[in-house]
Length: 411
Ligand code: UDP
Image (cartoon, rainbow, N blue to C red; front, side, top):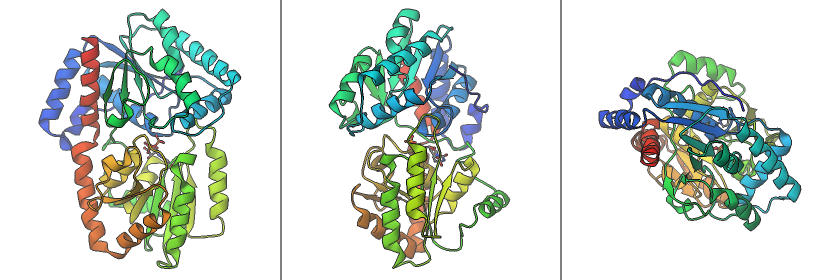
């Protein structure tokens, strides 16, 4: 196990974006948890929403006075092949899951659990990757409360994957899901719902001065910010459906000839499918100079793209929550997204973007075209997008919800 070092954060810095009552509530909850030691475990320090959340939550909790550590599992490609199969299987695809893969999963999770050489009161295991640590932790840390934080959409799982995972989820003390409808999908002793959120002070989301925007925009050449730009920011993953977005864009090119599409993706440390899917997407887009397939861009570059795009698209087929939606809305960019998982929690149809059925490529094209043709409408939706995220999906709110669950469990 290794310990990432996210940049320090001070809760006081959030005063500008959060009301006072919420910060007071956080201080009270932190006092309740002042004697508790908390450990978060996941499988990647970079790439994807879980790493993004932990990079902010862990330092803010420490600043609040809640002693919080973060460890990332040590594992190799063969383990991540198994956990990607679990991820895909729980989201509904019949991915292979052999006895050998199950044995790899058990060996690696047991080894990582045994490597924890400190005692904690609360251990939060994020997603299916570290879940197999539960039986070992019951022996090595019997006093600890173990929470499983499920970030994915488990509502239509493949049976074999569900059965394998359920042997572990039944052993945790509590689970946290991102939506109410996820709570009954997997057997757990008890559960709560916490909506994820974005960190308005992170480099990805903070307001930028004009000079920074200009410098980063130049670095993004050949993308032009003088012609219409549609962007999707996602890992290269089958559920993110970059091919569907590409198809929606192609249908648009007859009607908006100078439109450009940016498909921006990162290679998460724990996602073995990323490279192959990137290569397929890049090959499919190779004949069109107005499609830009970008990888591993800095947080500031992603910030500028989400901010300066005319429309952001999130054409996922499944989506646990989809932080990228709130990230774009916070920057006043309307989002056209599929009606799956956490996306419709964030997009209010016709108010800050549009929600479309996941197989409705023509619907995506129509909504994007409408937005591109009407500057005033886009501005209105963008303004409301900022307000909608401010009220519901900024970090301090998620922290209140999280610490309430923790406080109830450990006291
Ligand atoms: N992300 C990024 N660069 C990329 C692609 C994704 O920084 O090229 C970030 C994105 O901004 C977001 C996270 O990775 O913060 C993805 O989280 P989300 O919940 O949308 O999806 P997940 O990857 O967890 O399925």
